[in-house]
Image 1 (cartoon, rainbow, N blue to C red):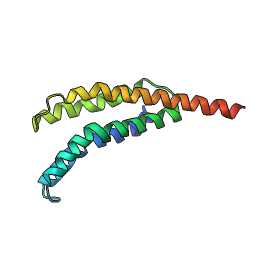
Image 2: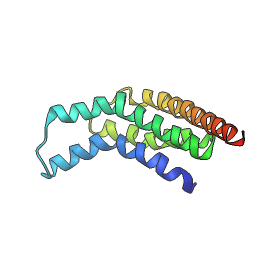
Image 3: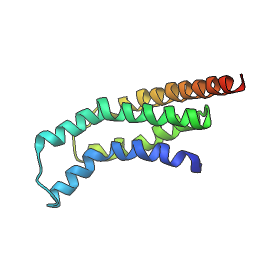
Image 4: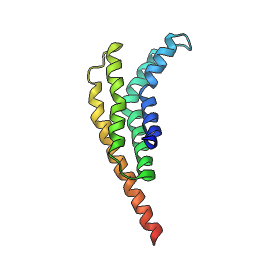
Length: 125
């Protein structure tokens, strides 16, 4: 379990970046910018989260090999966000991102494990 923490924690924090910004701005920590808030939300769902998940899963696959647990943990880390967002925003369809995120993680864990096997094969020669 310990080896999964950093590989799940980084995508989890990126998920929450928009919500953290929203709450800190409303606490008066800094100026609230509506365009930045919307940009973090949309770009987070469509760009930042998939890229961070892909990188994190790929590095995990290279370091530890294939594991089906990482995509499951990444999917589980998304569930609190699906529950939280409807309390404050219109979040119809946010659960739709859960399956693609799990698939992205699974694909990149497999790719990372293949790179690990390929590197191990090259080192033996």
